[in-house]
Structures are given as structure tokens and as C-alpha cells.
Image (cartoon, rainbow, N blue to C red):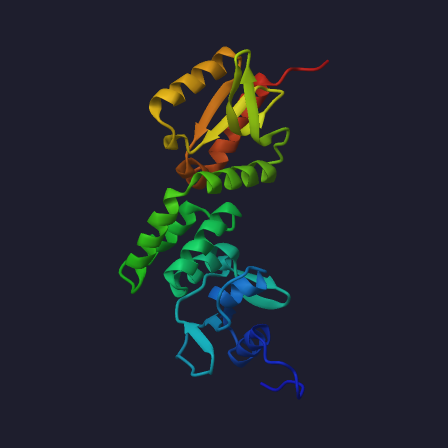
Length: 247
């Protein structure tokens, strides 16, 4: 491939050259992530190309079929979709970088746990699959902060508003605590990661909230990542029931 003399050879320029040099290739892994606008710790070029393995400097070829449903066009280049890109990045990045990307991808809704599980199941028996299973298990545990970010993203994408994060809730005796996501008008509070609390303080907290007229719904990281549509539907039902009707 030829370019103007003096043009800096950047990772994005190399991505373009690799796709031109390999007709039919699809940008994948860190290359696709770059074109999706994600920050990945890799300057190498990755393409998915189901043919004989060509030898190109700084170009890594993933010899695995990419379905058309996993292909999109970004700035005129054929690239893997966000969900497929997350999966491929997890395969080729070091453990730390892969875990960080998986956590971010779930928070930003670039992929879902069911999608990742399906891709890993389809790759059973291939090299590297046990490592992917281990990484997914670690990320699947989640944490309170990640759960709050993901829940907020899900509500925004569903067009559900009127909530505030980390909202203080009080009764006549003083502060009960901070609600993870609070709908003040409906007196509905979403609690996430409640397993971090001891049983006795948790029961006292819920008793005081109920006495003050609050409805509490609890969601785990698993709920957020494996059944987001069901979760959103449940919240809509709660809000329809609890929000005062104005005539």
C-alpha cells in the first residue's frame, strides 16, 4: 500500500492499509475498538480474515469466521460490531486490560452477559476459551460502583427519568441512608449490591424505609447484566403503580 511521503504511520492508517491489502478482511479486536472510539492499550492491527494466513508486519490475523450480523461499517471500513469487538478484545488483550474492557463494556451496554456466554459456548474446545471463562466469571461478580453506573445507563437508554443517584432518605428520626437510585416522587428506591451490608442493619434499614412509605426493589449485578429488559419492564410497572396521577 502506498501513502503520501511523510505521512505518519499511525495505528489507524495501518488499519486502513491492512484492509486494503486483504480484500474481504474485517477490522477486529483492538483495531475495531479504535474505530468505535474506545481506548484500548494496543497499537497493533487486528483483522478477521478466513483464508490462508498472510504475513504482514504489525498485522495480526484472527482466522475465525465473522458472520454478517457481526459486521458493521465505521467511517467506510468494515468492522466487527461492538459486541463481537468486545469478545475479540478479551481474547487477545492481557488479563488486566481484558478485564477492564469487559467491565466497561457491560457498564456502557456495548455487550451483555448472555451474548458473551453464547460466544464462549460456541467457542468450546478452542484455544484460549478456558481463560475467557475465567475472565468472565471475575467480571460477572461486579461491584457496587459498577452496578450503579450500569443501572443508570439502563434507565437512561430506556427513557426513564425522575431519579437521583446517592439520594439521602430520612424519616422522623433522622437519616436512614443513601439510596443507590431514588425516585423521590414515587417514593421508590433501587438498592444495588445489598449483599455488602450485614443482615441486621439491612433489616432495620428496610423496616424504616417501609414505615416511611418507601418501596424498595433490590437488584444484583447478575440481574443488571443477564436480564436488563425484564428489569426495565418491572421498574415501569412499579412507577406506573406508585407515581401519583395528576388530572
